[in-house]
Length: 171
Image 1 (tube, rainbow, N blue to C red):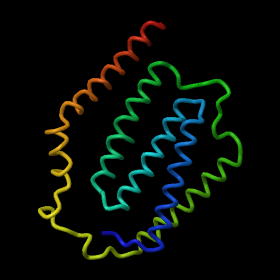
Image 2 (image 1 turned 180 degrees about the vertical axis):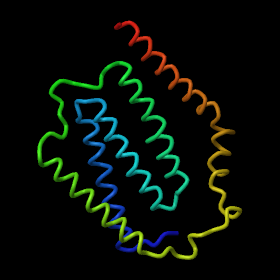
Image 3 (image 1 turned 45 degrees about the vertical axis):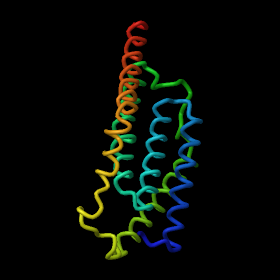
Image 4 (image 1 turned 30 degrees about the vertical axis):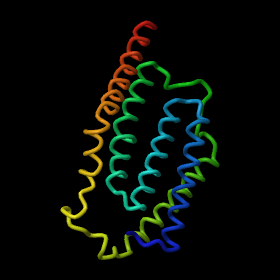
């Protein structure tokens, strides 16, 4: 179990607030590409929260699957439908958002430098045979929930095919 001290609570609240702010920015953007990038930021913050709660596998899956693969599919569909540019939708044209982004970057770099100096407790390093997280997640996913998993993949495929059909009709 990770150390749940003041440093842990501070980082948990910081990444939680960043996730909420990114989610709000996601739903308020006019440009679909900018909205998708804010959603990626939200997914990264959620992955950090999972890792802080000792769910490293779920955090890695969050980054690889949601922030990686699914967001690439979303951006592909957005670009295919030519929705990428909305007139007058400059998201970061003013000075204040740039200064805020720079300050947030400096705070995150400072947190990373503090995290890099800390030593991990000995109980965090466990042999793979004792804690096989992948089997605990993959077992139910491919046994009890296989139908839901496959239906979800078919629905995503149908959405992509529908976007291609809609794009072909416009041309």
